[in-house]
Image (cartoon, rainbow, N blue to C red):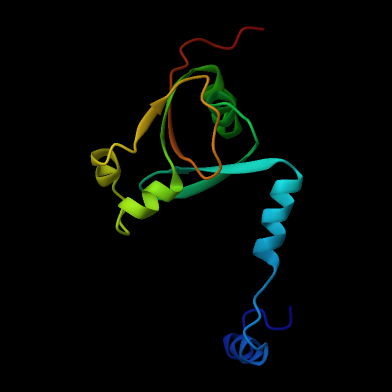
Amino acid sequence: WDLKGDKAATEAFLADSNGQKSVLPRLVKCGYKVLNLQYFFTAGDTEVRCWTIPQGATAPEAAGAIHTDFERGFIKAEVVAYDDFKALSNGGKSMAPIKAAGKYRQEGKQYIMQDGDIVHFMFNVTAAKKK
């Protein structure tokens, strides 16, 4: 923690570490695997969010991780796999090349979320939750 905020000291430390990298990313991946967790992304114009859900969660359950109204009023999920987005987007933000390639799909309530999905949830809540 002594190097936090000191760019020169951080660079010197990394140069002395003989190419070794942090194990933190591996630790996170192993932790997710042991706890049977996975993640999905939502994206808007100004931000991208990562959400954690249990493995085997359905699309409405994943929507509920964002807000309970999303789960209650779930209509459909528009989904693209992260690998497909990365391969087809050419570094851009637009979904147009993904849609043109046929990789953008609509999924219903039975869809089992996959690790790394990029999702846009469609929902409609009209009445207050019944007590």
